[in-house]
Length: 132
Image (cartoon, rainbow, N blue to C red):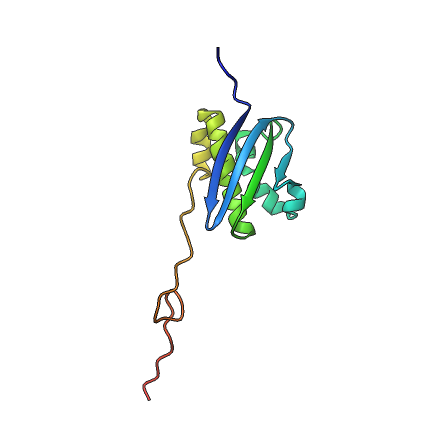
């Protein structure tokens, strides 16, 4: 007897932000931290960035998306959500992997903030040196 999976999950990270994304069959509702997407991210370009994996695969109205995100800032969270959503879609149908990779949606952005070094003012900046 085969079991049908009720949802598909993907985890995305960007800088210090983490997002856990659940895809369920539905009508296209997107909820981020128990708030509608338009409330959590009020700017249109941010909303478009988040739903990019769905629009690339043409599945905007086929899934309800439940997202739990924490850490980082708004841009980091958007990047984490986008990666998590792309990974969940790749789990749903591995045929989408090539299309998602074509748009760079399955690649994790590895850039992180560099740590401050001792004996220096910051990561690279030195304390001011005066000759006399």
